Length: 373
Image (cartoon, rainbow, N blue to C red):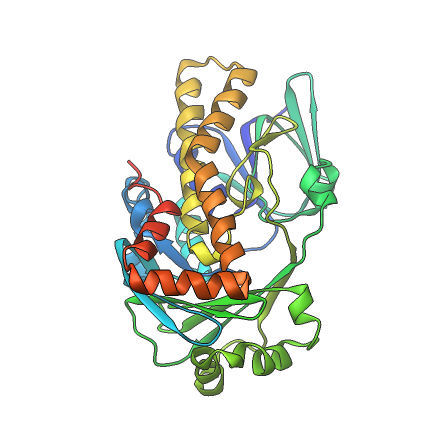
């Protein structure tokens, strides 16, 4: 089979880029397929927990070299603007996906094969993969990583179960000029969703919110929704009245699903959001993407060094490690979301957190991990 790769990675977000860089740094023949050329913006909260910094440094990735903001404080408000504040024990940093993904790309571009195209078909036969792109190129590899994000046409092609379930969420993101503190990430609730605010490396404020279709369709348009629903929270009202948009129009994605996914499907190792999506209110999706790439890469590289691949054992080991690392985080994220979207439960929860200040830091800890080695 001519020009077969060791591994093909489908999707060039943080999970795919992290895995590609780790494996390419250690002589694996890696092909990364990404549909959009770098740099580009993505719908994302753009806050990253510092738990990933040791591993990023080991890969030669320094987010502060491009101006990432150091974040140490967290603020959350309920739908009426009642605030709670906490210090972030590990801290984090604010950086746009435009800059962060491109930082990886610049390190990777001379170490791995990178193809800008859309994958339409993945087939596993006789213990190897064939990957067909939109341009009808057919690529071959022993292993394939799925890092194609929250929802993809490939999920339908692979007949993944979560695609048959309702996905009643949409997300909206844009950058703004606004006087917001560098060291803070904020989460402001409104009826039917929540909006995160944090500074990026350009001093722009990233505003990214998640809303249910049920709440959004009453207004039918982004501007109307922001003026009539988000503005009921006084913090968001002030922000959207005073902030100056930088993008010509917001970025949006729809049909977001938080249903359970499998870490391995059709012999494809799923990373990042392709394996499981934590609610954005937990502010840790990017760190989880990087961590999932580390789990797979270290496991794969150990087998690669020995030239001894037991595919089934690798799949079982990765799935077990993934669940051990992330199952409780995802469970906590679902629990927090249920509270925030229920007016009575949210009121009770905020009251308890006000009386017992340690509650909020404890919840943050349960959605974050320890520093990655």
